[in-house]
Image (cartoon, rainbow, N blue to C red):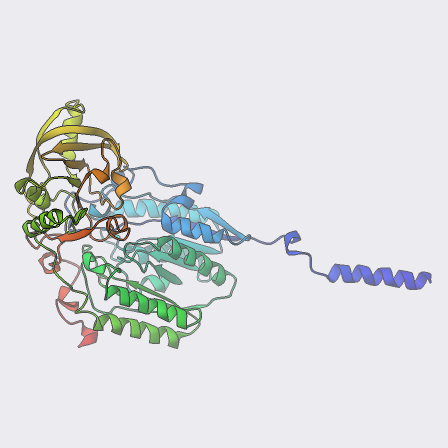
Amino acid sequence: MHIKLTLLLAATLVLASCTPKPAADQETEKLRFAVMTFAHETCTFCPGGDSDIERWTKLRPPYVGDEVMNAGSYVRGFVRAAGEYSDVELIGLESPAGVYGGSSASWTTEEAFEHFLGIMLQDLKEAMPVDGVYLALHGAMAVRNVPRPEAEIARRFREIVGPDVPIVGSFDLHANEDEEFLRWADMAFITKRYPHYDSGLQGERSARALVRIAKGLYDPTTASRKPGVITPTVLQWTGQSPSMDIMERARRWESREVDVYVSVAYGFPWSDVPDVGATVHVMTNNDQELADRIADDMSDFIWRMREDLFGDKPALPEVAASQAATAFAAGNTPVVLADYSDRSGDSTFTLQQVVDKQLSGVLIATVRDERVIERLVSSNAQVGDLFSMEVGGFAAPSSGDPVQIDGTLSYLGEAFGYPQVAVVDFGDRNTLIITPALKQVIWTEEVEFGPIDPDDYDMFVVKSRVHFRRGFDETGYASTIILVDAPGPFVGTNALDALQYENVTLTDYYPYGTPQNRQ
C-alpha cells in the first residue's frame, strides 16, 4: 500500500515536471530591435546651399530614447505592430528629426551625414546584441560624396550587427533606390499610395516581417529591377491610371502568392544621384525563381505603361487663372490652384495672376519669403499695420519676379511649426500667408490659425504636387482642381531635360532615351 502510494506520488511529480508551464508563466527571452530614422527628400537643384548640422537641428534637436518611437508615421506604425508581440523590446537610436526647408532643402553635407550616422551607430554598439534593426528612411536623400546614402546606412549597420541579424527598411514612394540597399538589408517596404496614406502600414509590415525573420519563420529572398522610366512627381499620383494600375498589380501579386511582398518606387528626379528613376523590389520566402518572375513582370508592366504615365500637361498660370475665374462664375467652388512646380516655395507666377486678374476670395497658402518676415519682426510690426512690400520671386528665373502686395497685416506669429509666419489681407477678400520656408499645405485644418477660416474663401493657391489632394480633393472639399505649370522649364517642372545633371545620364531613361536593357 505504502509502496504503491509512493510510486504514484513519484509518477505524479515526474509528470508535473514534464508538463509545460502556461505561456504566461514562462520567462521568455526578449527580441531586441534597434529603431532609427534618417530621412530626407533632397532637391539638389534647389538654391540655398547645402544642409549642414545646423540646418538638421534648426527645427528641433534629434530624437533620443523613447522619443524615437514617435518619430513619424512609419516609426509609429512599426511600434504599433511591434506592440502585438509580448517578446519584443525596442531600443531607440538617436536620430535627426528633419532638415530645415524640408523637400526644398539641398544636398546634405558629408560632415552632417557622418555626424548623425556616427551617433546612431555608437548607440547601436552600446545596445548590442540586438535581434533586428528597423531603418525608417525616405530613399531620396542626397549626400555629398555618398552616391547611395540609404544603402550606405544599411552597410554600416550590417558591419556592426553581423550577417545574421535581420535589417528591414521602409521607404517613401519617391525613393531613389536600386539593388544596392537589399545587398545589405533583408527587406524594403515602400508606400503604394501617393498621397502616402499607407506609411504607417509599411511600418507595421516592417515590424511583422522583422519578427518573422528573427524567429526563423521567413527567409528573405529578393529581386530588384530598374524599369528604365523617370517621371516628375506630379505624374505619380496613384489616384489615377496608370499609377493606380501599377500599384494594383503589385497588390495582386501579394494577394495571389503566399509570403510575397512587392514594392515599387517611382523615384525623385530632383535628386542628382545615380539611382534615380523607378525601382521594383520583390521579396519572397526562400523562392528566388518566384522573386525574379514577379520582378520581371512588374518591371515590364511599368515599361508598357510608360507613355500613359505622361498625361495631360498642367495649365500655364494665365490659363489656370482664367479657368479658375470661369469655375467661380459657374459656382464650381472651392477651386484649388496647385502650383505644382514650385520646389523652393517662393514662386510668384500664380500670385501675380491673382493680382493682375483681380481675383477675389483667394487664399494663397503659401509664399516663402524669409526676408519679408525678418523685416516685419525687426520693425516690430503689429496686426492692423499697413503692409506694402514685394514678396517672393528671389530664386529667379524659376520663381518669377517679386510681386508688390499692398494690404493689411492680419497676423504675425507661430504657425506650421515656424516661430514667425505673416498673414496679409489684400484686394477683395484675398489673403496671403508668408512663410520662412516651403510649406506644402495638405489639409484645410492647417490654415485654421489667427484670423483665417478656410470656409471664407472660394479659391486656394497651394504649393503642392499631389499631397494637397488629401485635404482638398479626396475628401470632396474642392469642386475644381487645376494644376498650374511654370512658364519655363525650371526646377520642379516636367521638363527634366532642363536640369543640369552631373550624376545622371538622362538618355538612359524614358522619355529622354531608351535604357540599355530595353534595346
